Length: 280
Image 1 (tube, one colour):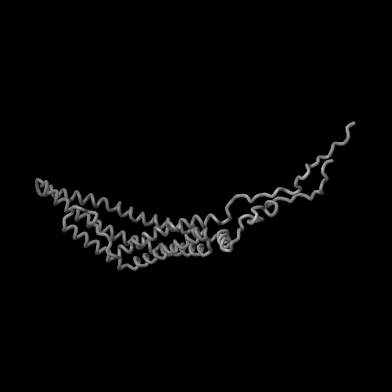
Image 2: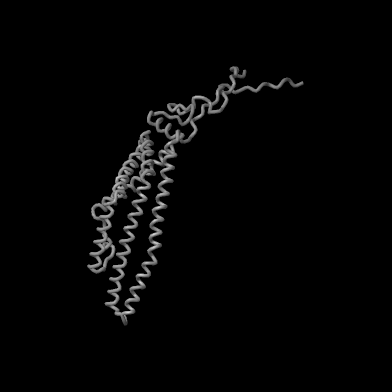
């Protein structure tokens, strides 16, 4: 008759405690948003820098429309330069131009500083600068929209006058090289050109205003998202942890050993087992 089944015995030297587990890979909670938005802010800083430089160029006299219209008569070139100077003078007389220009300069500086302290040197100050930058941009959206509309109105008016002068100059050259059979033919050419320009004006005006509206909506959405992510508690805790030199990404993680101090989060420790003698 077979005796009782022998109890299973563990091999000599087998560990009685669970094998230490290495820290699972993963990103620290709240570490992604600062890096992503830091890069975005650096890009926005470059764009704001281009806008600020453009404003400085405008203060210096800008670029005349005659620069991009070779072959025109001296009379037309002189008139185009005069209208460009008049448009710039009107722009300098608007309070919205100066406020928008100053805002672009401050936004440029805040964007660069926040981007550096979120990506290259993560600090809580970068988060605060990003929030300040977003609030400033949101406050300046009405000013930028108003200045954009006024600038478009001046540009459209100048463009209409310049196109009319250019068309008349082209008709004169055409008449000189190929005279019309009579005065009625010359008048017909002139009216046809003016009709074509008048039909294009509503589309150009609508497209210009549409760009201002779409740009303003995009600015509102992007900066609202920036505020949302920068005000998350996880982002604040991450930046404070990095500044203090700590690491709260993995509970129970010992950064000096690369091992878990205890069982994984949520796991139950194994019951204590009495030591067993090696097999005879």
